[in-house]
Length: 407
Image 1 (cartoon, rainbow, N blue to C red):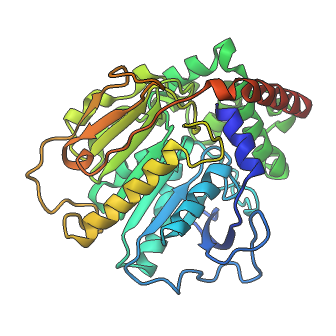
Image 2: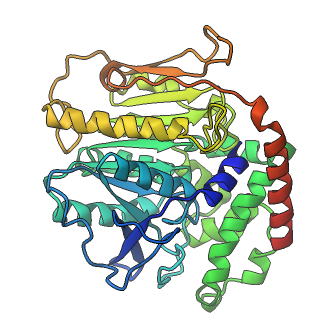
């Protein structure tokens, strides 16, 4: 399902333009912000000559801003990012994409690789830039996959001073040890190869920088799995003495206890990146700010539903509902732009898993979030997969062949 959605989004990518803004960090590194522009142009993503200028001046000062954080080696060209940007445009909201060090098109001035953990401090610089420029606008963050891990670490680290009104993460991993175990299974070898390919793309793009500090890039590029790349490059370059130390720091399964703003987490039970047993649903009993939605199916960032593969998918609907709900709560005075609930009379947050209940003709998949955050959000989804069997098989074959050629 994940592969098929990637291919479909590649074919049906809407027209979106961005203006890029660079942020120079204290250590000389550079991260970026791609501000979406409502004017449409030719299909794909463009960076106008005026990149770096403010593209959001036409919006009201109090209109919410959605800060989107891509996954490994991702940028504003990712299909899931463009889909969210387009959906936000359709409901009249503005969006900006956070670009990590080494993202495609960014100057790579420091040999610090993306590790998902230390990048929370880089994200801090971007949030501060946005908050200073738009102090009256609610800031709603959305993180995907590894970007979701970074976002959870950021929220847990900065707490009430995070500068974020609310956040949603989709397909984020929670216990890296379990994620690695899952990715190592033969059934998930294709996804492991895909992530490895993304890492290698960053290394190839910035090969000269790594070689100047003594990294044997030829040896790193021989790696066949994500674990090998993390062991030979990512962990040592980011100050970890071992791969296990890196995985322990990267895991977010205990970080949800420290989150002080509303956080909605969307995962699928069949996501190879986040095995369902590793999702810390039980901790929502101890933190009323957190709610989980766990679907029976959905893969990694896919969440396709219905018989029309080109229709809006479940995760896209949930994100739009969540953003709309947060906006309404802020406008009605229930939630401050700093993410603090004005009333604490609601029940403590909890999640009620009902993926196996009341299966109707198509099979329902839903986990209902309840409590302080959950009472504002309700969605429903049904699955029909028979329609996809032939297309899915062909898509898998095509991606395997394309990735094999790249290796």
